[in-house]
Image (tube, rainbow over all chains, first blue to last red; front, top):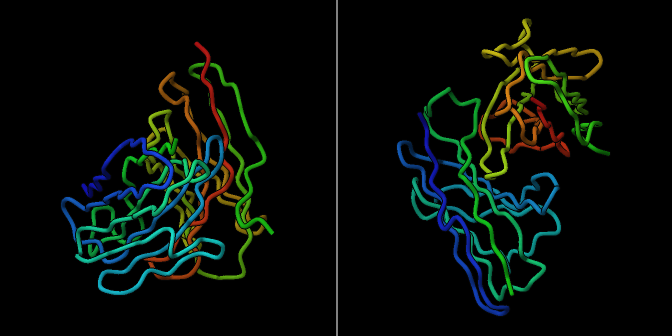
Length: 119
Length: 116
């Protein structure tokens, strides 16, 4: 089946540093990837949609300069949290829609998530 | 307005019994898809079941079934014969429009705790 690998699964960093999170589709080509953020005991909120080879589309209220998204290939999208602050601490999850992915085009496949803690 | 509403923040269910998780949605699109995902404490999102707006029959996947009432705009999840491993957060989500690459909007979630 379709597998999405997300790395790192958890990261702790100091305030002011930048952190990169990778999202890879392992057995299919992901034309579109979505990045979600989930605060404790809350739902998933979409941050941005990235399409391979083009600029990401950000949801209202999400700072594009702070959350840099790159989807340079059909199997890799990255989210970089720049100049991270404690309020950026959250669970970040990517999901991917593939070309002819397992279960058809109806289902997105999610990564296991990355827990970011900014000290 | 909330597009996906899950009114039950938490539920207890006895092992081996069935449980129904409520989900109502709001959309003006004629074509849309409804999903249920399970999120255990590890954080991964596990796809459970899908219902398309044009599907005439309710979706079923093993112990999961979706009670789709289009006129009421509800898509309740029924878990039969609950198991201890069913303890998790459950999210209802909607994809609007025909495009399979369209984004999902999630409800607030329901935490289910299965008691032995």
